[in-house]
Length: 424
Image (cartoon, rainbow, N blue to C red; front, side, top):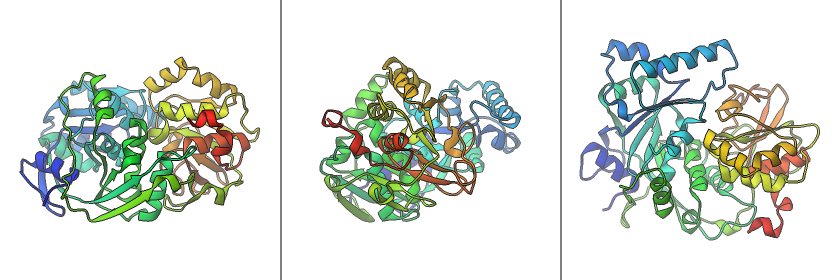
């Protein structure tokens, strides 16, 4: 019996020729990633009591993103603590004010196919879109990783999610993953790996693939994996990475479950309050009043997302009664959007462009919602209190749905704003 991608990566990390789902293995970690909120300030005391020596500072990455820019003195103190800790241990890979950690480690080449990446954030699984086994761990567990470079993991069984066919105009990878989560349920893939396959997945850009893997955890998955191909190779070569592992599942690998979809039958999807698996076609909730729209996050703040929104909003104005916040997923994306004139289009439409950060997605800084307010967001979670008040409501959709909603001030189907030329 062959092995899945997840099994192959953990077999390599554990020094074994073969592992199977359910097996517990000791693994060597390729990248240990922490951010400001769940990083040095939480691990420092235990780390020092147990020796205080990093296993390999070249394999430790720290990103300050949740408290940037600081909105309170407490957040400013957290940033200072994180910065000082990274300086004390002479970390070569410390990033601040560059954007959410998941996007930053992709852009800087830390994510590579076949690597085992552990981070103190649940959306670390986004790196699986490039063929890495990436997952979130707790801060306490990270102490052991920093000291030894090792930890134990249970090898997850894999659910294959097969999306065949062509994705219709006005439908995006966000819609595919929301439909998948609806069918699996928000805990339906707990401690399993999702492996996304099929012709629709292979046609996706890297930006789109990262959306799929980012939200794998919203179904409870340990990671979300996509087989790397020339799209990943070209991205990494542009960053000076030339030795790339074309890891893929064996043809006779065992899957715990297989889901198969026809992408051509899909329409825009919206996750409704207060569960991410409470998903319906946009037509079901079209017309729902909103107070704010939010375009950004590590899920959908990349350049392709901003381009989609700019196409829809160009020459138009957002509804007068709403706020439209745009948060590029990184400083590099912000600069690219500026060069392309995208930021001008969005601001002329009435949007406010904030600096790259986790921001209002997690309810940390600029743009949180108040009691009774409703937001349409391109982010990844919509449970009570996620983006501010527990009395607020969060709807989740694609960047196109967010942009269309901004124009009308109520949830709208983006397809009506996409001409045939735009859809090509």
